[in-house]
Length: 92
Image (cartoon, rainbow, N blue to C red; front, side, top):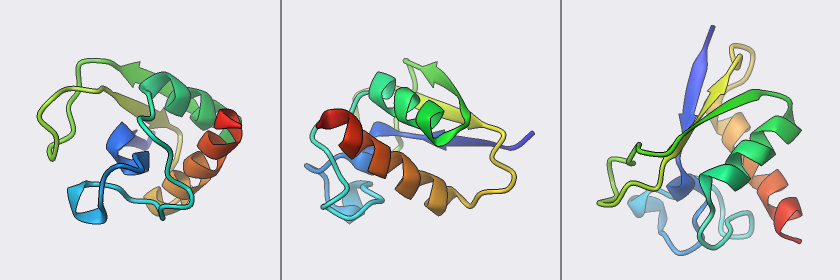
């Protein structure tokens, strides 16, 4: 089973691309949480496991991560873009 790890920094509007953001600014949100990301992952149709103590390598403090399971048929970039679209919908 293929697993992808997704960090809040990927979706954070306050970060630049070089600081770890992976989505365009129009899809990014302010201060995303792992709970919001996990909910968006489930909306996309995958299983999510929240790891609260994980830290992204480009950040100093641990904001956690979400392990997305069963993504063998999806590229990580496509997965991140889909999660970002749902994060925007959840914030409305």
